[in-house]
Image (cartoon, rainbow, N blue to C red; front, side):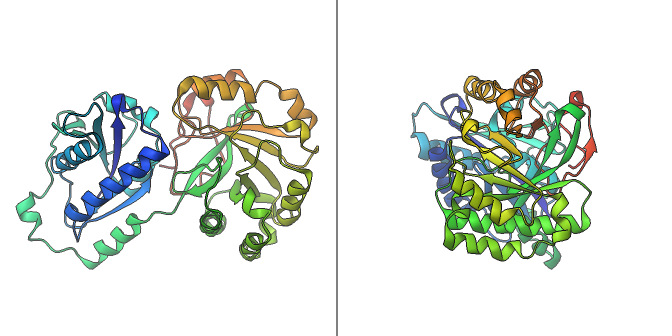
Length: 402
């Protein structure tokens, strides 16, 4: 009976701040304070991605979007004051757990149609747009915005024990899978596991936390390796932690759990890689991982990565992880990274682009012949391993797993 929804929060003048780290922290603090006071037991909530909360009520069959208008007004006032220029808009998608988590991991730009008040059919479930002025149903169009059962009946209901168990599982989702697409053959070759909806690539501020999250991803990959479909499993490792002896030992503990028989299917995604990693650091990473992994993929955030300084064969691939919301900057990064494919071929290194989130970016990657692609416009984040699958590029995004 549990009703589950993802609530995504968009803030700022023309909603332009929707992916900045500073604003994400402020919004998380203000929204959590509101939910702690108003979204009380037996209801549950949890922050699962920047600007994204999962809400659940084990007594309800449908959540009340009108109730959340009060949250929108509270955010508006605390973030911008009574007469501030900024605006607050909430999008709520109510559906099954997989669809809720896919919505949580979808970047702001990919939701522009919904923000404009139109449903493009990209998500299965009930969708409401919520502002300080009121709530409207986008899917179904002109549908109800109130909850079910009504609030006065809801207060008299008690949740069943099983519903609470399911709810707690939803409250703290840990890992998600994103498909990795090989464009020349138009097929998925496997999937990468990340923390929530993350595709790791940028700088890391807390190495201990990074190792703990990587270890949780490794545990999830072991489960999928035993029962999931065929294909490469890409597991994350933090570069800065791997070359730090004390943290390297933490990784060695989890590496021992990976059966050597899995080596042909295992690939290591090394993130937090600097613009020009040293020869010694790369060798240290290889010596630690290549006993258990058949492929080594370097995740970089700088499109000017110094491939010239990388020893031939030191890595199997280098993947640029796109970030930010500026479409021109993202396109420029793709173009710069892919402009010298011959240099990468000479180093026996494949190129990839991760975090592709719009049709324009996908078309640009096609024109520049990027071999490997991933991101929400390629395959939305899924609770399960994507595996191998043929898929014509014109049929992207791939939705088999959701």
